[in-house]
Image 1 (cartoon, protein in one colour):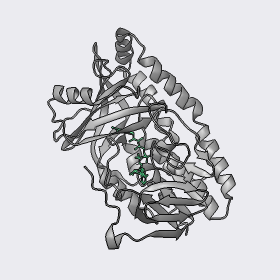
Image 2 (cartoon, rainbow, N blue to C red):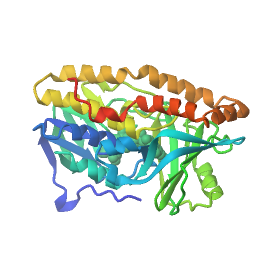
Image 3 (cartoon, protein in one colour):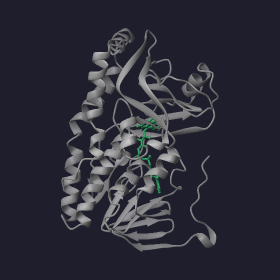
Image 4 (cartoon, rainbow, N blue to C red):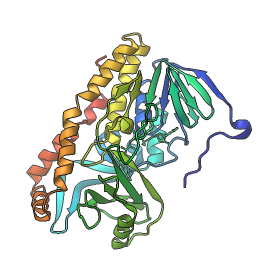
Length: 366
Ligand SMILES: Cc1cc2nc3c(=O)[nH]c(=O)nc-3n(C[C@H](O)[C@H](O)[C@H](O)COP(=O)(O)OP(=O)(O)OC[C@H]3O[C@@H](n4cnc5c(N)ncnc54)[C@H](O)[C@@H]3O)c2cc1C
């Protein structure tokens, strides 16, 4: 279990700061926002209850081009040209037009933080009143507040609670081991609506199960899959995963990553989109810091930018629901069709286009 290292005793200095920007959450979304503000001259404070990179929040697989573009290629552990998909009736190797890589979370966060020019404090965020963020170490005040705290969407009241909220469940184990294949299983024997995975990362394999139905518990199938793959069920990691886009601004707060439902439905890929929308938000904030727009304009523009994705996310949500209603033989036919290079390249290219890696180098429009 990760050790919670909120400063204690004499080290536990109270927080009582004024800042230009407070970024709550120091994972993919929070670090991407802060990275965009580097060199702007803004006083940026990042808060997280854990040290940076201390607590892995996912299986850590993302398009390689994104990892390279963010200057985090050094965190890559293994790279894959193919995705192997198993259903009860067929196993298909889908060739990818671009590669996926698994990476080391701690290294990736350290590489992102090296590019950030901000103060970092370990503190638990408890809530917010207007422009004041309340933490277990005291209060911080800033005109620009960003919630990158994950699915709970802490800085919005009322919060975001399962099972009513549109959330999936994900759980995985991280045994030592090796494999050359990035594999997923679409098999109701493990999960009625969802999928299971085995993502190798050099000397460990991340084996897990995700359910789009929040009431379906995934521990037993995770153990069963690990057993079937002859992997030890050790080092658990699990969380809720949003599968529906939410408003990215509310009550003068910016929401990025899982807090805004930026994780893609159907695939539950949320790292790339947390980085993507983090960059978009950071660019709007930078324009405020540099006097090119006011906070109201930044809120409007970032909210509108995220809102442009509503239809794409809803379509993916519809497909998420439809796929798991398919008869197993129809599903097998669909999966087999994606074994054809032309179809898989077409599908995966469109999929990458939702949040393309070129965005990292593109200039701000604000
Ligand atoms: C089992 C599992 C496997 C997954 N695998 C993948 C994958 O391989 N690829 C992929 O693209 N996506 C994957 N996802 C989805 C992905 O993890 C998320 O979409 C992504 O982490 C979202 O990033 P984020 O920065 O918005 O939030 P998070 O990564 O959840 O970060 C939130 C941060 O806020 C901090 N925090 C939370 N509450 C508080 C508080 N009250 N006070 C202070 N700090 C707080 C946390 O410590 C954390 O650092 C997976 C999810 C799960 C559950």
